[in-house]
Length: 532
Image 1: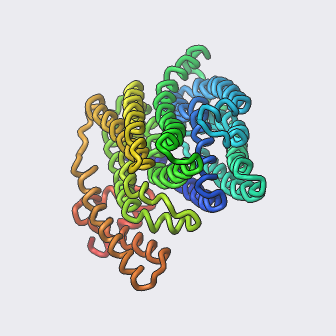
Image 2: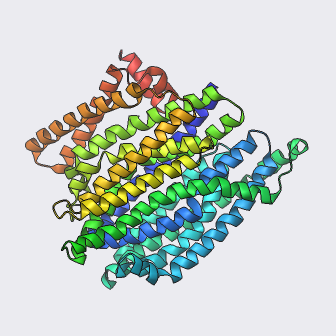
Image 3: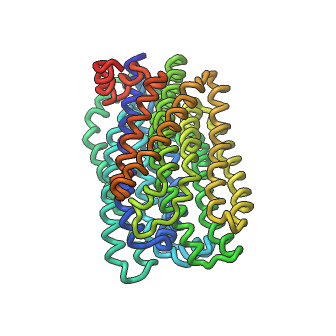
């Protein structure tokens, strides 16, 4: 059991590390892009991306989780031929959906731009359309490798994709800047297709170099294989991926809701179109960008959870399932709670450091930092439920969260004194509702007792103390040298040290847990030597 648990943690760690690194690359290219395009140009970029993400979700988002789950249940039973058949059928299904989504996005760009009340995003939508088809194929291959418990192909392709996206985004935005914001933003979005293409080529290469091992496994266990018709597999793909896609699509729709409602409502209460687009640029290019970085850890854990829990469920290892559930929740909160408090407390210096040419929008982070906790919990709990075949619950949670968001958007953004902050409040409420529903059902359906003291209270107490230390440290250092960057990083370093010291002191982190985390075990040995 310990070996399987460690393997699960390693897969989660690999995906989390890749996700964090990819997000960091995302920061590195979005910062110069924001400074080149400004808040208005970033608003154009964000509007087109919200629509792209919806088509991406329809064609690709459910595939890695669904395919990894289906493959893992066959691999654990030595059904390697059927696992390969899952891959082939899934590529046909995802490729077909992705191809027609690409065509609709390209040829329907004018209609979609009209729907979003934004005439500026037509070229950006056209430039993004090839990425929909490319990622649909890549997502299936990523899910296939994850089903075998191998997260490296996904991690490397993800980093490669984001690296090339980062390089080409800045280069193309700069090249086309003289042609206006519309064309320049389209150049930035075209980089997504370029990065996705190279990510796909890499993972195809990995697949072909693994074919010899794959064929050997199929030949070895051929006699114990149970024949599965392709129609049966196709039906399972649809029934497994559809609930996942619907759940993610509803959250994606909340971004489209923001994209349309924010600009329209702000114009209705007296703001100009340019000002409304400016505010939306702050929402999508700063608030969403910064708050989703820590959540990438939760996303990685949920992706690793689905095939891992599905495999344990196939073998009736109930104790292992409960251990994975508790560990995933604790690990998520260990990171996301301090990130939430830290981003809220240091919102203004963070924005000044990252976006010196457009430093507005820090209030969105000050108020909305707490959304990190609820979004992370919602994603991890949804991954647990999906791994245990409770596929309808995350959909219900996402629907109810989306309804709450629409209502609060309409009510709060319409108040002139609140305006764009209304979208932040509605986001917090949306994720709070969905995370509450998902967590309640994890406890009820899987019969897992969640230790709220360990999972939530101790990280929150330590994070509040950390936030106080960060605030004091920043202003002391700033008073001494007057440099925002030095003060910011000094407060982050001191705050992180304070957080872990308080967590260790209140037994929020134990030596055994530190030893189970990849690389962190070295830190555990150091703490033991110094008597902590």
